Length: 74
Figure 1 (cartoon, rainbow, N blue to C red):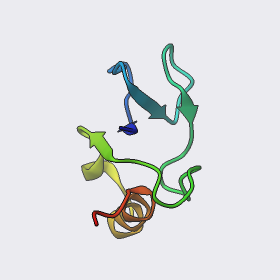
Figure 2 (cartoon, rainbow, N blue to C red):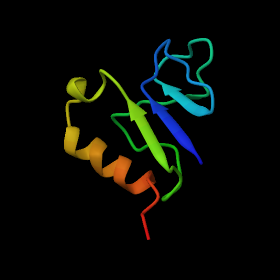
Figure 3 (tube, helix red, strand yellow):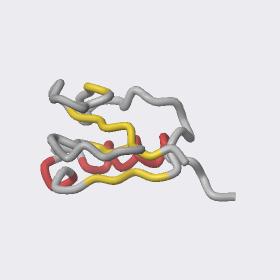
Figure 4 (cartoon, rainbow, N blue to C red):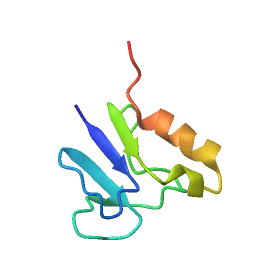
């Protein structure tokens, strides 16, 4: 199972790809989530995020990106 911890900050989760916009200790991928996410379509089985979505300038754009990178159920 491939899992993404989106906007992890210092909440580094074992077994997840930890993504944040700052190169903090334990962050696996540094990226600005307000832009296109650096993953292929249908990459993740699960996406975890906490205290992130309410800060997005364009929530619909981010949700579209999350939909794009999440594996579709069959």
